[in-house]
Image (cartoon, rainbow, N blue to C red; front, side, top):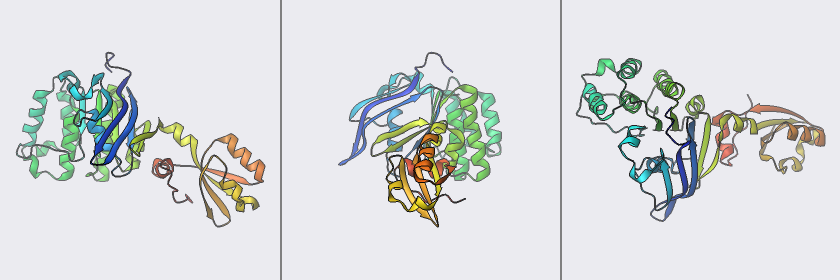
Length: 306
């Protein structure tokens, strides 16, 4: 990890970005601590790609400030760009180049390029035998893996990824995620990952930021969130009481046979209070990120019965 970098590699204040008459980002505040892996979550059209493009200097906002790697994102210098790795969801590459030419082309622009890492990723990503092929002839999955390789081989300090494994089969999905995880662990890189496959996000991040309504509404450590948000299966005669659903820590409720399923933001003290007050028993079920995500957005998910 570079000790000259700021404690927050991304620092955003009151960022506003509009498209037509719609505010895509609306007074957004967000900081990304150095050395963390953050999952950036949101519904389709919530502005995740716009936010990532803004912190990379690819989009200029109308209002607010965005500092990336200690610099104004609108004018990142060569040193800052050398410390960035980016995979766009459309993984734009130069189709007429051969794979080996494309790798060499990017290598020449990256002073910190690691040829040993390049060799390992060529093998892990099954790209070595494709070295003589035109990039445009590669499968979508191979093109995506090439994009990830090009974003990682200079060992960047900040890695920004927009759907980096959407075209991968389950085997290569794990290979690519392992390569990303290695950069965080071995290099101390800071990672921002946006993906709709929440199992992938959960396997690699330690923080989650939720973008909703043009703002970051939740930004917290994943483990702490999973401890705070739970599903409770409540059994007892009092489960028919509407009073339970009105408790301040209850997010949603649903009847399942003779039991009541609650999604709550609560802990052990609230559970004991509920059991004592209503003479019921509570079974606590943890929520993985896929089931936690709609709860964070205030959408009632289907009950977890398994």
